Length: 405
Length: 227
Image (spheres, chains in turn blue, brown):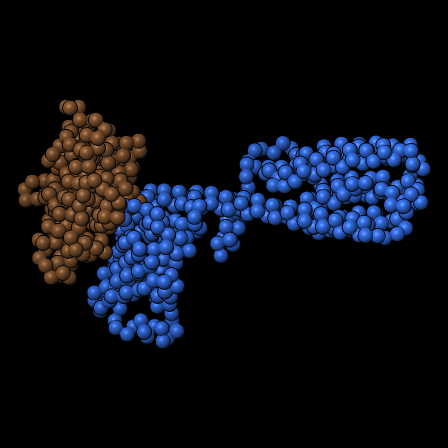
């Protein structure tokens, strides 16, 4: 539930610093704004490519006398070196890590592996001679796995393994090992890359959701303490008796109600341990006819508990407007007893006649009973309802304090 | 103005000063009070001018908003009460400034009213303040109740923190739930006067403790220049 909410909030505001004016229509479509979370993987890949290149050149130098086409062998070494330089250049840039790059890498690497047939000769290859590319050909698998995840890794591993088998006229345990290693490397690096990207995306979403919620709370506070105070004062002091004045007064009243609804809905700001100050959310419920009283110190409560308590309080308050009469006032009191939180909602309305709640449940209109009692019972708490005809209604919600500071 | 003038306590008109940084609010409150026969002497928009003007016009009651920008209404409350022993300060504030409200009351403010209170409640509160009574609104009761519980819960105190009697706790809880003094008296089957005494006593203990704490702080930090 929370994840879904965070995602929505994240999508909405994950715009980032894109407010700069456009420099004509030809600018980059997607500016590389965020750090690529798998950049360390790419740096590792660069190291791997360079080390395996040196290894491959070393092998070529050792075997230089035995090639059928020695000059072609050296030409391949030059080609590998040049392509490695190109790869390093692209790997280092966030916008250089593209699909065409990893695909080209695979094609070139496989072509050189197959070129071992004329260069090294079928006979030598049949006697377990190394391919001209040797370890360097594992590079495309790693690059593809970092780029596209486990399926890219597996697919590129399979193609490379096939190119490894083509020049041979046999199959033995070493070639089997190569195949398993290539597929395994592609899979494992792919999984790691996916997990890293996912974690980074989750972190970004959480951060932007938190920033959005914090900003929202700041706005809500300022609306509640500023605009709403003024609106309610304007409405209360009356604008006169003319038709226009009555119309204006109704507009003011509507806007006031709309703003109140706006600031009391929406996501909450969680601290690191997922707890929020219940007081700041409760006080948004205060209106000219609803007074909220809270302790002077913070009352940190788990976010889910807060949501349930707020919903229960709102239900009790909406019950006031529905049943207690339009002129009824209500009071909300929050007490922190250390091991227990007590939330009281009292009104001075007409009260609930005996049996009415039971009747409401029997009718299937759960309203009060389910929303309030059910929510509090789910939190391991209890509800005490005191009411009598003509004496108002008082809900006392007792909830065990789980998160205390 | 047609109604029996609530501002006149007998023949004496209560003089009031309004401190708020919001012009619409300031003028609205002043008009409400004027219409009901109070004498609004002056208004101020920040803490410093509030203290300066109060010293000049010596109002009976200062209606103090706490959210005044640079220097808060708490400091202004402290200064005004120190300079003008006969002037009462009534805090009129948005509901969110819990800490400040408590600080202002500890510093000697006679009561606290939320800004969403009706004009009638406001007038009644000013009248009570002028008469020397505490304006013990539900919001203030909740804060005081919480403050006593905080003090009881905080460990190792050199100075014993004041505690509420069971009866005082009972009274404060009922006040915090919106019952009037009369309703509390009826519910607990005690006299109206007794309820008032309980309420006053909880405030007095808190203010006294605050003064002791301040003095102790001053001595510990060598602020007592006499020694």
